[in-house]
Length: 195
Image 1 (cartoon, one colour):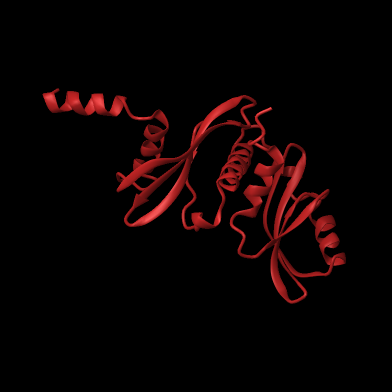
Image 2 (cartoon, rainbow, N blue to C red):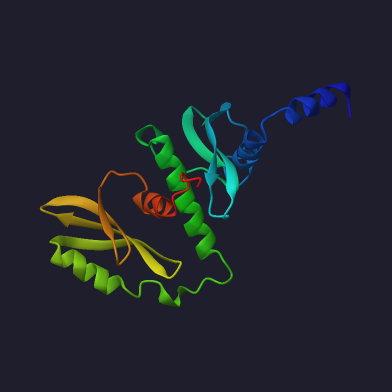
């Protein structure tokens, strides 16, 4: 190890560990496979994460090939690609990443029983039809904690819309709303409530 390697190691050790985690994700061959042009903490706070304990989390803004992204790191590290982050609030970003994590961890669990997935879909679609929705298409469906969570694209009064929720509660979102399925799951968990 040369003198310059020692300086490099010292510089890296002074870096925020959340930045280091995000860099590892960005540089992974299955992600961007390169160093970002720039990277910085966009927001950092303790959240009530699905791990059932407070977790130090951060939204990390970075640029790769002139495109800007806002990734999430803390108990997990991930970044949505191809969305307009400027249209999302900081709270919405945290809720959406939380919802993504809950859904991803659930469907990838060795105990996940997909035999109940979609069991209430016909019932939910019939509710939508009664509420004057037409051209209903199921976009997503995941069983989480015994409840089926759905995302539908539909039309109401000639206008395209998204409807997200469970058989107990359905919420309409504008068609252009970014990732409402994950946001809804995240809001249900409420990571922003630290009590």
